[in-house]
Length: 325
Image (cartoon, rainbow, N blue to C red):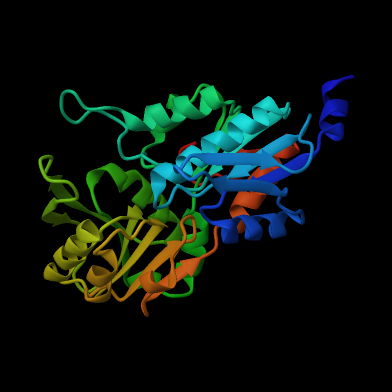
């Protein structure tokens, strides 16, 4: 049997953990398939049990889980599901993690710290994953932490397509919240047809989630600023960045980010800020109590579905990339 015959006989099966079933159902709908029936439950002591209710032998398995709060539980469930697939003789296992948990810990800032993003990649490899798929990794170097293919997808096209109809590009500017995202901001600017600015800041390494904003580099006065980032956690950094832009003469600030982590007190900060609109994707669930009037949530499900289809059919995932792969 040659490789093409093997691919043609392989069956795509899609599995979902319990963290965010709504996204999984949306992805499955875009693929015109159903999620595979799975029993997932907690034992009395908090341990997790998983069992698939159909045979998975020889299948091309895609198992999705959003690494949301409580993040450690859902990562563990994800690992257990992968282990169950491996032991049930799935032919190939692709882990779909729209948000890569622990991705911010990708290097040692100080002595005696872990590199937890590498640990997560190692755990999934050991569990039996053949491939990882994620969206807007905190840093591209995380791709090198996994010993196998990593499909690094980008939400920029989803966000940009929305923004094109919302802003006047002739009077707008794309702003990177720090020097590390200037290159990404340049791609946004090329697509929207705007100039670029960035904010010089320094993070307080002794206090978690504390950022000191310094100066704005670029001409933002009189412009609508599109402030981009990969995630919004507590909202402190993005709100301080918006304040700095207004202090430098910006007339309007729109925030666009991929991952809405929204740890407390993010929602209160964003609601009470001068930011006019916060645009995010649904890589993570946003419960009703974390939604507010100026929040816009765009669906990432079609992008994930297209990537899964390309992988299954041995097509080109690179065609979906908008940025460094």
